[in-house]
Length: 283
Image 1: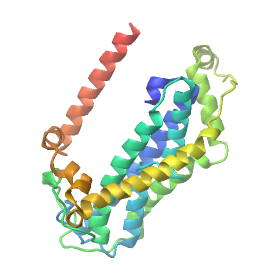
Image 2: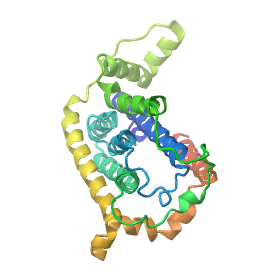
Image 3: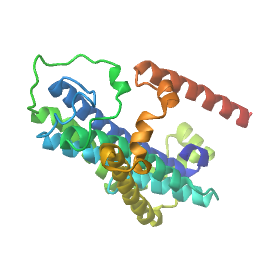
Image 4: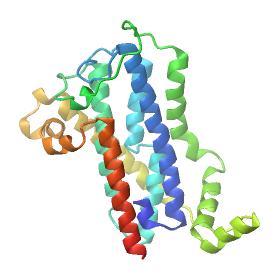
C-alpha cells in the first residue's frame, strides 16, 4: 500500500512500519520457539492448556498480538498513520480501513492461540492443519522452565517495536532520508558527491491520534474475533465467525497449508505478479 502511494511521506512511513512489524514478528517467532523447546510441540491442539503458568511468555505473546493489530504504543500504529496521511494527501481513501481489517485478522489469530495455550480458555481448537507439518522437539522430556536467556531475545524485540519510532531524532532522520530518496536530483547528488541535501519533509504527527484510535479499535476487534472461536460452543451459530474462518474455508486452506513450500510458492508468485505489473505500468 505504501509503495503504491509513493512520495517522501509514504516512504518514511513504509520503513517505520516494516521495522516495527519485523521486530514484532521476530518476538513471536522467539516465543513460538520457546513453546516448541519446552512443550515439545507447536501444534495448537497438542499444547492446548499446557502453557498455563508460563506467565512471562504469555505476556510477550499477547503483546506481540497487540503489535500486529497496530495498537499503541507499537510503531506499527505509527507507520499506519504515516501511510494513511500520505494516501489522504494523494486523494486515496480507505487505506486506514484496510490496515484496520488486516490488523484485526492477524491479531485475532495470535490471541486465539494465546487464549487456548496460556489461559486454557474455551473449547479444543477447531482445526490445526498447519501443525501437521512436524517439527522435532528439542528436549527429551517436557520441561516448563524458561530461563532468562531464552526469553530475553523475544522481550527485546517486543520492546524495540514499541519504542524505536519514539526515540529522539529517529523520525526526523528517517523523514530527511526518505525525502532524499524520493527526489531523484537529491539522490543523485548524494550518490556522486557523498553529501546529503537538506529537504523540507512534512510530518504526520496530526495523523497519529486517529491511528491510535483505530489501533485500539483493531485490538478490541481482534480480541472479540478470537473469542468467537475460543468460546464457539457458548455462542449462537451466527456469532461463530472465528470458528467459521478456521474450519469452513477449505479451498483457502488448501492453497496455504502452512508447509514451508507453500510460503515459497506464494512469495514467488507474488513477486512475479508484482514485477510484471510494475514493468507493464512503467514501460
